[in-house]
Image 1 (cartoon, rainbow, N blue to C red):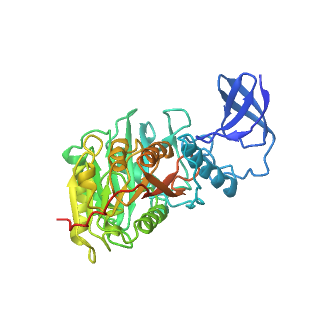
Image 2: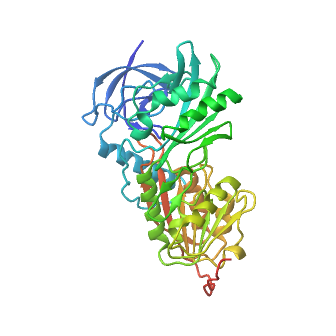
Image 3: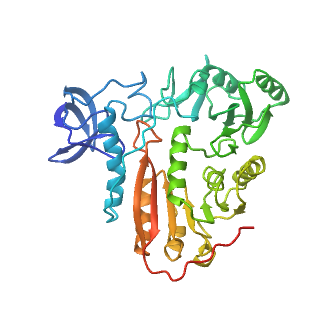
Length: 422
């Protein structure tokens, strides 16, 4: 039986929250101030009807909204939605006892997602390419996705056909697609190992110029040209299924924030450097030490270094910073340190940075909670948090990218003399 509830706020995953005598109830696809009819099961509420809609409610951008497991909050007007995301960052820092001003969020529009991970399943009528249904492992065949760049969205059928040969009926697979500046970089995983006939058939997809590279279960099937992404500083070379900032506009915004925060500091250490998203831009005016634990990512960075012009010396080192973080004596020569770890954050490295004398630190994170934890470590070590800027890289979801800037506030003795990287 449905109950009538009033939504008071939006949780960090995008669900509406109603306070009841039995505790909180989380109701998807609702907004603050709305009166809704809900069927309650534990802490979850199934929306039956919107009795009194919010004036901030807007029409969703996608026909699959509420069914697809991707977006959670397409139904909210832009301004309150962006205020909510900004608030997610503020709350994460407040929970660590950090009161700080959060800069206005940098917005990112639709049709900008250049990296997509599709789910695949082979049915009697062919291969279905799409995303998981909400709260399900079933694959939803999508007819549109307003997040994706047109280069991917308009080629869904072709991509499904590409995977069809390597899927058995009833079996599932995964496809990662990156829209680069010279074609699609496609990686198929969890599919059958190609036979010689499969290699020949798949190779024919390289002749039309749409797919630049195809990788299957980690093995390269064909490459008509090396996939590349042009930036304002140099060329980046994505790796198959590898990490890449999800949208080009957000990458540009993050890079500009990092570059402005580093300023004229030299030399610079770029930790968790990946393929060099920040490294190459920073190297336009300072020598950079790039540290990364993944050999394949470092190989991509090495290629960028060899084909880039007008940059200072870049020294690349392989190192697992989770188990072997750079220690204060190693950090001493640097005028600034940038770190952009995975969602788990950089606790061990932050503890070392907190004991260092690096004048400037810039942290980039896709997880405000672990960023706030690392910020607390730095602040307790004598650093001052000077600026926090969210970037809406993950549109219509509860995820947000953040750049946090720090300056050494405690007395640290004479500044270390910069050294040349070699």
